[in-house]
Length: 151
Image (cartoon, rainbow, N blue to C red):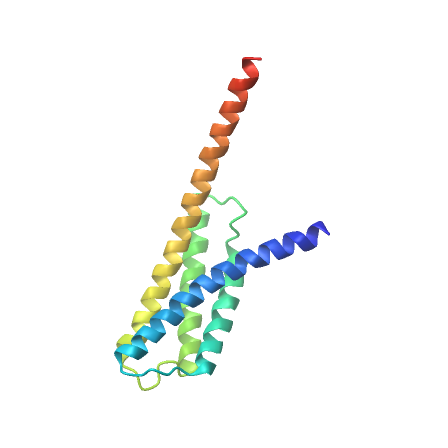
């Protein structure tokens, strides 16, 4: 039972990250379409975007698990690798799926740049989150020691 709960917890975190990336890419895609004067988007493109982002998010969680501790160098290498891989995979899928068919080159470039910014934001948040969690645990430990000394 414990393994099932742990898996679902892992999956929920993965879905949260995937949905955040998907919301960013879909929002930017829709904004670009509106700028270009189109109010409709292809549902197949939306489906391809979601499947691609979900797969990449799962891969991200496997390559750079936020539950594990990594050295600074390892963290940067893994984060850079998954970010570059994600942009390459997204670019290939978008070309094969013709996400930007009939659109200017800047549309695709804008999506890729925003995706990179999203990845960097996640890595920064993960690093800061671990830093603040560690500080909080250290403070709690210090308070615990302080309270137990006085007894």
